Amino acid sequence: MVTAEKLVRMLAEKRLTCATAESCTGGGVGAAITAVAGASEVFWGGVISYDNSVKRDVLGVDGALLENKGAVSAECAAEMAQGVRRLLKTDLAVSVTGIAGPGGGTREKPVGLVWFATASAERVHTESRIFPGSRDEVRKAAALHALELLMAAASFREV
Image (tube, rainbow, N blue to C red; front, side, top):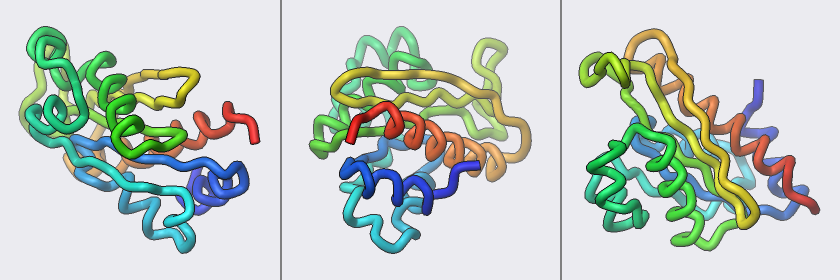
């Protein structure tokens, strides 16, 4: 299991900076990172884009994409990560967008479905997970997985 402490240490050793774009986690990823002493050396900030207007107007997610694919999609997650990375001028970014529940799910997009993306200058990676449990459990599991993905993205970067 990746801890925020390990992530901050790795980013500092590699002299990398990061940012977050969060929807269903509501700032949980950024909160975990900033709980670590020394995080200010590597974490520039985050955008909580709970409403689609913030995804569109602040992060630059295409409005047609939001209409056609929805906020809970690989494409939206990718644009969120790229947008916050551009906005805050960081080496890396991670995004989280999903359905924490208890309502809001469909057959195609069930409660617990969360899309993630990491972005660097070289690549964008997206993946999804379906987390079981209560709203709080889904949000906590999603925030932890986002930290793991950010650490994986950092490991691809050369010092």
